[in-house]
Length: 50
Image (cartoon, rainbow, N blue to C red; front, side, top):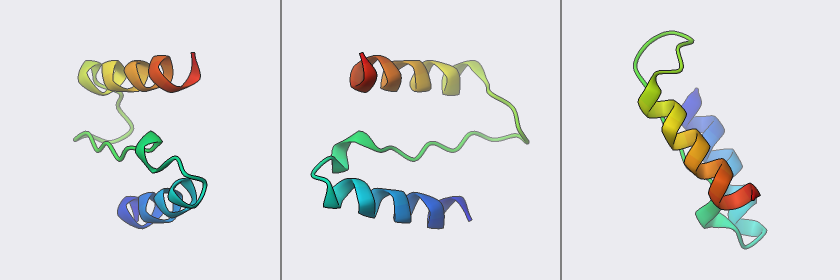
C-alpha cells in the first residue's frame, strides 16, 4: 500500500517539475518514529520548506 501511495504522489510531483522533492522512507515497526526516520524527515523539511 505504501509503495502505491508513493508512486501516485511521485507522479504528481514529477508532473509539477518537482520529482526530486518526494522521497519514500520506510522504517521497521508499527507506528513508530525512530530517530533515524525523524532525522530524515527533519532534513527533508529543512531542505524543501525553509
